[in-house]
Image (cartoon, rainbow, N blue to C red; front, side, top):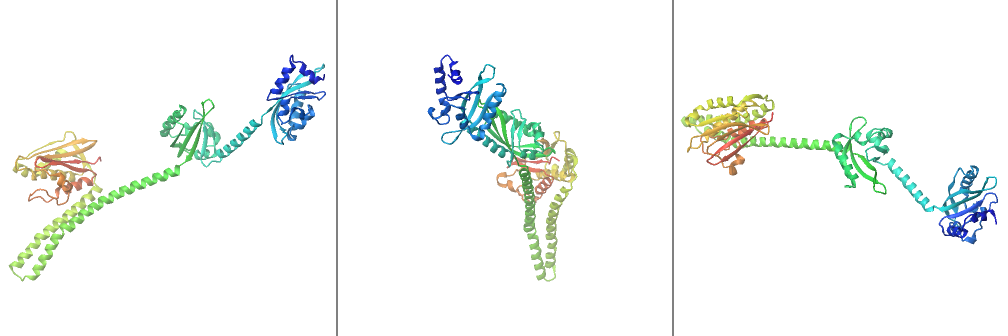
Length: 508
């Protein structure tokens, strides 16, 4: 019995050992280093597509099966194991030749299992395991990793791996370009360090939701701080990578620089706002122009036509009393024309004064008392009861001439349109509404049907009662003055019960 065969006799049940070798998926072998005899198990030969009797059990057979390009790997691994007296393990991966001509990846392992009388290595036993599938997967994984690395590094957008605590683990060149930091500088920081504080809470909250399994991904627009200190707008997309047990490993962040887009949008929004403001201003100006056009077309046409008619009549009449009478009518028509032109000039003057108005603190009580003195005759004639309460807002910053005109117009109107069936009662008071001073003039007069006439209430030369002194100028001029300084005027009224005119002054 050869030494190699004797190696099997060391087992108490050699048949059991043989059965294990033959049924095993691993190919077992025994090699005598001195005689170079070898035992190759049936499963060893099957690894390469051979039946047991097709291959001779020898070291030479084994050597012929090794792929020529990998033979040196096996020789070196065995040599190192023997020369080190077993201290260097014999373990190597190499390609073997299959019967069909293909290559089979094998993991070769072995160990000195018997020594001669002098202690030198005699028998080496080992196993061959087919790792071709593993190698294929490894190759595919390597290709995938290379592709990922290429896509990661050369992506047109920033890509980063971020720890669950927020530390940058890996960043590509685009992230460095977007934020202005080198890769090494970023890897020493966290994303929190370079995130705008106004955007940090939303970002962190969504990361928390992702870690808790409430959401799988999220996307948001946020701001980072560039290394230079400027603000960078990005579109951020984040997903979470988990291990096989479902535990979080790290985040994958995609970072797209949208600073130029945001700046363009902001400029566009500013331009739209400016255009809307300009359109509103033009609309107001057009409204005013329409008012002036209405004055010119309506109020100037009549006196001019009258003048033309009188002129024609004057030419036809001979000198005498009748002709003198016609000439005398010129004065009346010219006075009416002058009055209308003055109204136009006053409206223009109000707007021009408002542009350069210097507002001063004015006492409501003082203006109120002065107005009562001016209107004292009407107040006495109508036995009107008039009172003021300015305790809540004693004063307002305003143009003196405008405030006096407002008091005079509103109170005189309350007297002018008082009811003949009751004693006029007028209350003037101030309030503070939403931080703005307001003035209110309340009466118990004739009132106005706002449903029918509300749209015309502050129109030029709009009158609503048959009063010989009504010209429809006072409310129009008051509205013009109030709006010229940024305020607003409005009214509440019921027919034969009275009216309340209110003015909200501008914050200034």
